[in-house]
Amino acid sequence: MLTVKETLRYSRQIMLPKIGEAGQLRLTHSKVLIIGLGGLGNPTALYLAAAGVGSLLLIDGDTIEVSNLPRQILFNDDDIGLSKVAVAAQKIARNNPDIVVEEIDEMLDQSLADYYIPQVDVVIDCSDNFATRQLINRHCIEHQVPLIIASATGFDGQLLMVDSNIKNSACYHCLYPEQDKEPEQNCQTLGILGPVLAIIAGMACLQAIKQLSGLPMQLNQLSLFDGLSNQWQQFSFKKQPQCPVCG
Image (cartoon, rainbow, N blue to C red; front, side, top):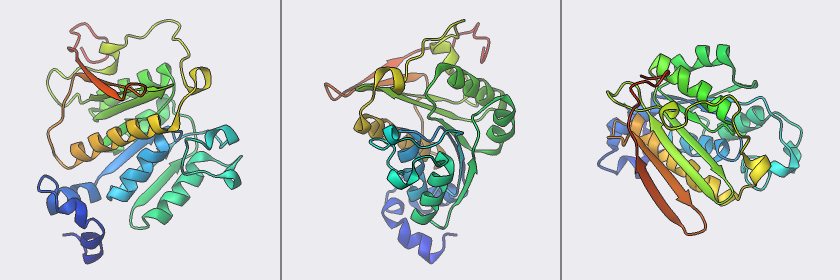
């Protein structure tokens, strides 16, 4: 059962018939891995902590730079030069001291993916390059852990859910097959606007909360956001039988 404090804290979520006390309990007992504590990872971690997800694992080996501040909302000028995960973990713990926050101050690699991904209920990919996304996708398929992939550049964002526990669920590789030389398209090369990241991160959190609380999920669907027109588009795609990752 939820404690009195938890019941009061999460009362507005518990009021929702599709969440209720049972859904909030599931959130409280859940563990989520967030990979990348940049413009997407910052609000994602903050919202999931505020929602009462019981345990958050944060992976990022980067340090805070002045150019991060317009969009990485957990950081300020006093944090420049410090570890992103260390600062994020400290501030998230102040926001909700009742949850557990574990910091992994390293860039994700094969061994870290093999160790941490099997420990969690959901992985949220907030990384900024194709190679890392493909690595995360492979290990989530291998360990059968649901994966939410979020990305954004310029005025545009996209979101994708992968769950190999569901029959015929396609994966990231089905949609974006690996190439010998992947294009380097990220915030550093194309620029980004902070509110676009907030929108995509909010949607990623919504997906995670629905998944963790047992609500139905839409798979095999790529959601694209155009910040200039304020429009969303959804595209359905199929699992590729010859996919080397999930086929």
